[in-house]
Length: 558
Image (cartoon, rainbow, N blue to C red; front, top):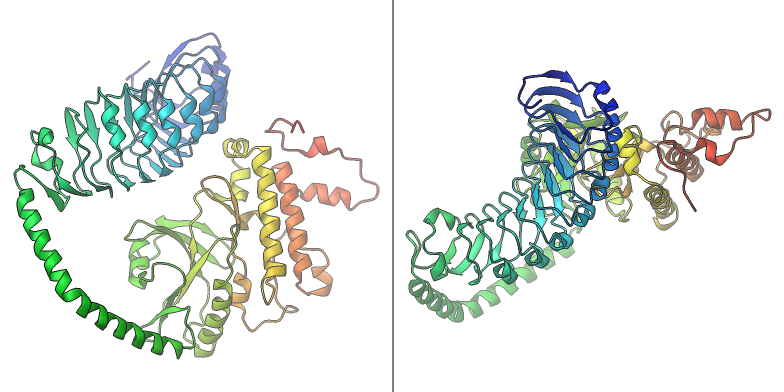
């Protein structure tokens, strides 16, 4: 049924044909999500849905198709992460997920597919490192990970993929050197590492038929046997030299190097003396400063921009440009205190900006109180608490700069069937532990202690590995710096401790109640409102634990 211009959702009746072995619906106009019922076709050996307009997640029920040899979902609009059930396809030889919006990391489960010959994950939003275990794919002939956001070095174990003919890793953020072991891949025909951050020299063992190393930070001599490649294969590497058009000869570079060394020997001692003098003067000025840990910038109109423990070069203008002046297209969530925007900085780092609803930024007393409170919160450092990098007070807006979490809130993950299934019992238990550790730190290890005031599944964020981080701690304090614990309204409906309605006093116990509700929500997969109501009644029915567990997961075995 390929290329027939068929539109609309994929009909669910199709998945009653449980004996079919080959299903190809590619290059049509199918839209909507991939139905979960696709897992009923357990005899499929080939599934091709590429070249459509499919959206949503890759359903975890695909993991039931253990006989698959070919899987093509390319050129759609699929998002979220690669499901871990990908490791179930033990017979898979062809996998193409290219040209989608798939994010997250490349899971290690993918490296279990020992029969894989063709793997294409290009043109997505994948991040993290290339798995070191990629070398387990001994039969791989073509690997394309280009046009993603991958970082880290090229794993040395990749030389175990000795049958590789095509290796395409261009347009990522890979760094480190080109592994010498690459020379062991004898059949390599195409090798593209262009547009990365690779450094070091070009290994003399590389001998592919097609090579592109352009736009990196490589240096040294271009090996003789690679000089037949066009000059464009090496452009964008200022440190390269050799007998290639447009590049200086290495003898000229050596003369220049000797000249530089001589200059350094003469001027370095003088420069060091001057540098130490300036450094000592800076230390003297810094010792007189009241705020040694705060990197601030005050504009002429009184606006304040401050960043802690970051690169110290983030400017207000960078953040405004990164979000196109807080355009709705960059908004990834809203809450009672403000809207959250995703911002990619000029250096490629991604942060979350929480633009707060407040109109007092022109009040100098408020600005000072806000700064003092923000300084206290900036000292909070715990592995399960989202990092607060800094803040900005501006006459037009006020926002906080936070660490960015790829998978969003626990609330959203639990309400998406595919993501909830990915969140197995082990991961859910780890989330409960992480939140408990974070609250213990805020309550007992911070001086003065910090009461979160709004523990809910919306304020538990997950990173690409589904590890939990408590977010928005102290936001209420930032917004109401002159409020007492007695007058401040705090919390989200459904997570607020009952006694707060009577006492109006916010204490650590309010956080503990919210934590209990979140723990039940993690077990049940939904908010435990009805359960809490029935437990509060003495005449309510007896409830077994097995009855309230999330039915989308198999019951835990131990």
